[in-house]
Length: 197
Image (spheres, rainbow, N blue to C red):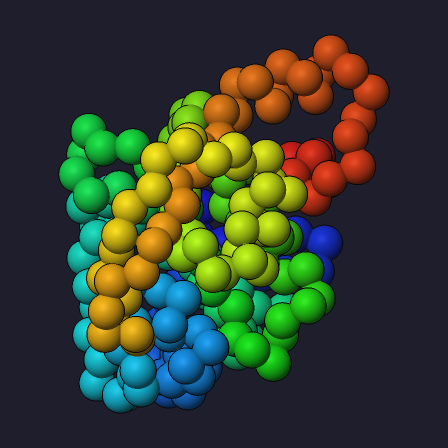
């Protein structure tokens, strides 16, 4: 996947160690950490630095493609990632946006861009995602992107909550979306807008 992805409003760039203080500050908000599996609450600077190094290692192994979500390539305001647990596992999407940037459509725009990038650069035709059942904002984003519930649910441990929480599994078939986009008039959705870029 490319080093940088641009959308109408955003620049998704590679993580640097300079992002660690911002990650620590934004993720230390319980409203963020409780909706993730892997971020503790609060998130110390050392944990943010370790997380960046871990993601770099996963990228080198082609197991993760993390991006900092920014307006102009500068300060991080969230992250978007496509990842897998092993080389033959299904690709998953993950994202979060800091609370000061909520309600502006940034999560949907960044996720749309990274989905398109995974489709074009990695040949991904199917993606999976999960969201805690009480994370209605993330579930709305996934629905806008075309993800459909699989009917499967699981209990996942959340480091922020320090307990398991109910999670909804979703999937996205990109071949179906591409076929419908090519054979019908354009739909007004963030995914189609970014795919034209």
